[in-house]
Image 1: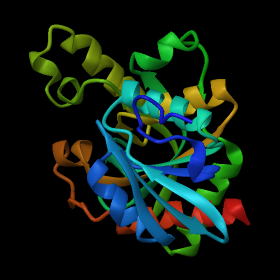
Image 2: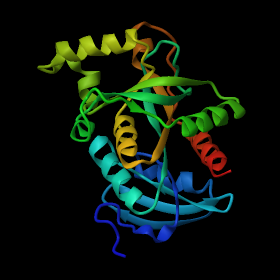
Image 3: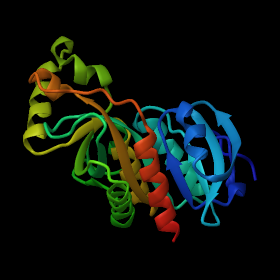
Length: 247
């Protein structure tokens, strides 16, 4: 079997579970939490390692930034035999109670991106698999972490979020940002909506756990706003959730 064009691996890995960070630089550190980890391939933004948990093979593969590359990763991994995806990444807090170092478990995502519009109309929700989400929540609780479960915003433009005033569409961006906060959106990131929608269309299961880096709303209000770059907590959440799913 030929390796898939973008991800550079085929189905010989035999894994039904995949942990998906965005950053290729995080793949090896996540794989080191598995048994017998080994490098598989690197192509474009997709770096892959393989290990095992409870006797089952588990892939760790980066997706790169944003919806398009995440959708490609899910499509090709599904064709290679993966049936359950756990995204592990970073986010910026939006809700005032979400603080740097907290873990956000996404139950659904606002489709403020373009990739999923080429799968289903915008009225279709981007939601997580209940079983995967429950496993992530149980893992965060058992590890004694501060965690939140709820809606995240998935966007395409990092600088559209952080500098809306200099964008021609700035008024619309600011209006929607405020609306999402008032509706209870927890955090902002760039990949979850694509993973959830593509997984739903394919018939795969998907969940997402995110490390909160900081919260620009807390910064704006003059509240304590610690920066938390350590991914160790959320990686443990993802690994323990996959272990529980394997049983």
